[in-house]
Length: 398
Length: 208
Image (cartoon, each protein chain N blue to C red):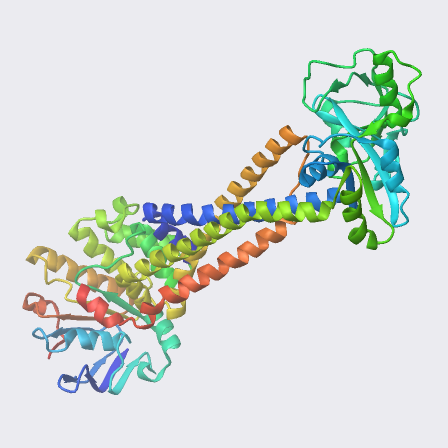
């Protein structure tokens, strides 16, 4: 026999009350842990995927849509822009890098980005297996694409028009050949298929039967811009939006705005979770207080056995700790399974694998919170122990 | 060995008690008789160290328990005193066996499986050792109370009205059990009661 065993025996004699306390405490733990982790993962994903892109130039329309399609690759493009005109903007003295991208085709839902090798440098990755694209119809694939579609260097496939998986129209005459697989980065490039601008132009020329096509009139979807001089941030977007048929959008600004909107929901859930956490704290206090009051006779008996007042306090605290630990385990399981389900749904929809971020740190912080909750609940609940008149309690029972 | 000298106690200014001195040598028994409200239970709780006297000394095994601090008194009580109540109090969430384990644990005594099994056999509680106290009969509960009072082999066994609600036969049975356990533990047995039926079982009596 020991304090823990006795506390455990006490807890299981009041299953309904224990169940309710565990239920609401574990629910709040699961929500707090889950929401915090989701916020962290999404914010990190957004920031990671920016990769230092200061500005996106594309067709006029929604600036957020332009950023989502050209930077995060989760939306349809706003339209196309003339490559030659866009190249003129890229010559501005404040601009360090300008990377053209063209999107519009996919293979089994994985977007094909027509670009230059600078796009790979932008995402701070390199070839893991094989080589960069050189010839027409060569493609380099992201690590997640290779893994999920079981593609290897040398494999060929046919791309489809549009952004949707299983599109009816496909480029059946021109198979794309995997020549390289990129190292994993945990950001958007992992789920992209990259090919050279030239190769797609050739593909479309072949389909049109026009082999003397002049590339001067080619179009791209957007130009990703990195400034060499940050003054460009202040002047260029306004100037492009005012004096060109293009639209300039600032990804950081747009994503911050988007994140502010999305965090309204997560903040609301966090506050609800905190409220439930508070209610579970009250429930735990009521449970411990009732134990002290209803079992006063037994606690007095234990004092006659030689137990000090501190031992009785330890008994109450142990009961709180047992409920807290059990709730924490259930809450942790809830959060972990919930997050895995959400990550799995995101992977299925957006082909992006997400990973937990500083999860142990969040768990530790929450553990400290729960410990604090138990300590506070115990401190309030043990007050009758200090006022306990053993003689009176025992006399009334004798 | 137990000795009290000039012990007084008061709950309020109006109700104060002065108790006669008591002196018991090893394994002596004492029956304290008195009407209700005369202070019998108060005296018992003073001897158990649950109450502190206003004045006087209570010496158990050459230690004056009125002079030691609360923490040491708790430990001393756990080790040396065995309390038996008229209505047995036990921990409701534990079985009979576990109650005896808890008794030893809180008295700071390492679990003695053989001692518990022996006690259960002596008091005919083996068949109910895995039952919770609320499922026991009155007689079984009474015997559990005795077991809880003596399992740790105390120096003094204090019983509060142990026979008041029992018939003659069971009353004699309980007194014999208490005497046997006191003898086995080499302990002083002090019973407080207003039940004159058991007077003949004791040679040493004190009337309050």
